Length: 273
Image (cartoon, rainbow, N blue to C red; front, side, top):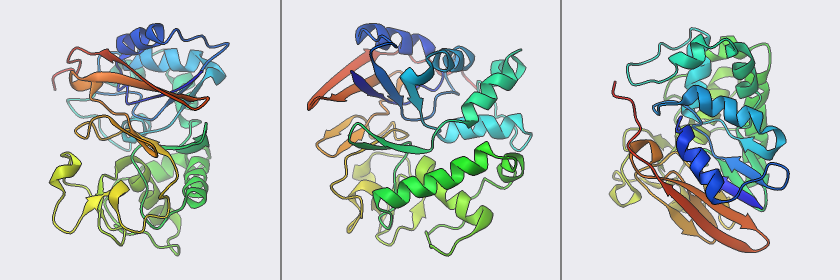
């Protein structure tokens, strides 16, 4: 059986209860984690160790919080008061965990679903999304990772152009794959609004409602947007249901033509900052 799972953010206890509820067996089943594996929750270190230990039974995407961990480990970003990354950064197996983390994916297409952490811009089709994700994976996995992490942050460029190159290109790709919620019809990104899609800023739409989106009709699964809640459409799955904020951790089975939603309730797990 194959399950897609929303943002964990260091909620290892909720993950264990969800795996028990779906009767998960790593020798038989496969899980796909849609990014934000760590941070804000109480057990980021245990979460990484658990996922690493699952080997090929777990495919993990990188979200903005996971990239933040890599940046903090390289001294490219100072941890904030609300971060819960200190146990990882001080762990004896820190190097192995961070190496495992940077080998994870930015996007994938499996089980009939295009999986990303946050979304896509309307100009990209599925093939371009995967190709651009692979470009950034190669940067993060390569010898230039540390240099890029120091220039990774920023909101510019705000609109995709095929001619973008170097750090600007990779920053734009990461901002789309790990941060997008709203955009203009031409794909210009908007980062200030985090509410649900019924409160779009003027001139913007939720990325999945953008007119002319080239991935229209391609089933897409994503996380990142906890205020959106669960969206379970034929061609769209939004799976960040706010586990770390006291919501639920959600898994959806996607195989053999079946669609089964499984959730476990979560206590509000965010560590106060």
